[in-house]
Image 1 (cartoon, helix red, strand yellow):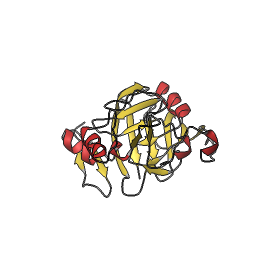
Image 2 (cartoon, rainbow, N blue to C red):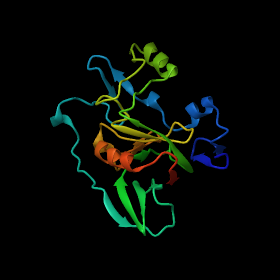
Image 3 (cartoon, helix red, strand yellow):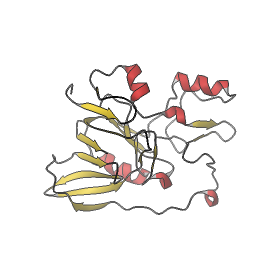
Image 4 (cartoon, helix red, strand yellow):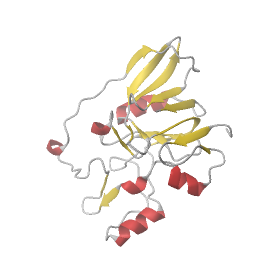
Length: 214
């Protein structure tokens, strides 16, 4: 889709997704796994939004689930499309006949917002996470050892499912920190609770249109 473009607000001018090199994708995508740190003692990854994550449920932030629901959606978009309103922090899966299934999402924090139109290029069930070499080198210089690969599971920042957007490093993915959903605190990816991302994953087909608006 050479005509489609991803706009990275506050980071770059509009660039062609099809023409984006892998180096540009790493630096401009907004999805920055380097913002995560690894606690070797506990063998867990810690996100910048919850730097003191522990396994003690009594220490977790108070939060309430924002339920998904069928809503009216008058905009003409193909059935099966995804429309994300980052200001509203909601994702709409188009059901057709003027209806959509609305989910709460977490979005990019200030300076990492983006918008664009693309397609879902792949889907992964409990995806692995592979910290880039640059991140591993940086953390090693601080005396912290990052694993080369984090197996999909409860210690993985991508959660239960991931929908990959075009040729970018952006994803719609789950999170093992559900209290961050509904907030603007990611590095550009769209976060959902694991329950919601599993539901969406089962509905969305590869090649489906996705629109992100800010």
